[in-house]
Image: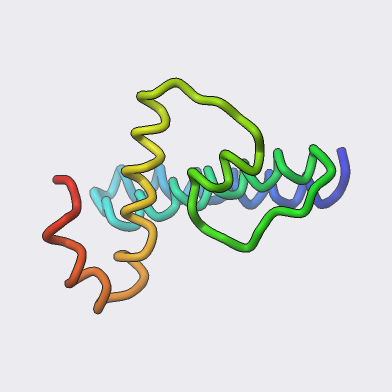
Length: 104
């Protein structure tokens, strides 16, 4: 496995471990952020494996398109919803603006 692919995969696994810990501690904002990060990194890994350079974006749907992966509708809906949780945990001003629109 190329070193870069291995690095992206290891970082994704670390995010997934952090998401699990935060889920168990009921820190759902942090958990959702790390879930997003893990999926983002795996999608970027797939793009790299296909011989392309991933864009420096965080939109999971756009990365999925770049990876040329088709998912069932329920998983697409999940990724669309998870996208909503990327910015709010990182930026308090955005969180305040968006929290009324976030699903509960």
